Length: 303
Image (tube, rainbow, N blue to C red; front, side, top):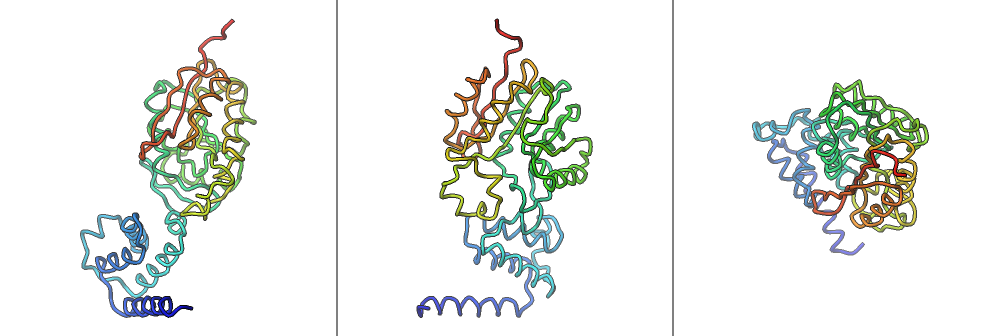
């Protein structure tokens, strides 16, 4: 090991022992954690992890900044922080993720819900009539999309489908936790188990990353299941499967909403046009990237 690297490592260990050997207050623990994380999300990550240790809401950190941490709390915080420094996602460390107005349990077997996917929820709520309808969320994962829609439209009949039994159980637990036990979840492979012309709205955030995308080796996605992220050489295999079967499943005038990659809009639009969808529209995510494309089938068969 080079002397500079050895010095840096020993200095870090010495600093850590010094930190761990004294009673730390909340504000001190946060400052130290942020300095170690050194990322754009460092403050948010540190606050979430400390809230998890203390089992307190975020406001508690700023209401009681001088509150000392117990030895057990410091040790727990140290352990969680070390996992985050290695790159493990905060949502997997805490087992929780906020999405829309929900608190969701997470698991390494499924994708972590992201704020950009709220764009998909908003597009559905702003476009689809509020009358009682049958809504299906394909590849539901934690149940985030299905539960967010059901929380806003309690008269909609919402179902989530996922191919993994353990993921279905996780979504059911999230439904119970958020008081949305009326939302149904079932195991299935995209549209295959759905009855012909039985659905008014299909919604999905399917895998859409190319299998050779270098971003798969960076950040949080390194820890997420590849089956929930990648979809063939161009990232469109699952999107094609959904679009190709959507016409069979949807009722006349039914809607299809898809989340996709920032550079896949044109491909998705062409696929939907070829499948007979009309009135296509694309919404941008929080980073102003094309993220959600949707359209509806004709209300009557064209002769």
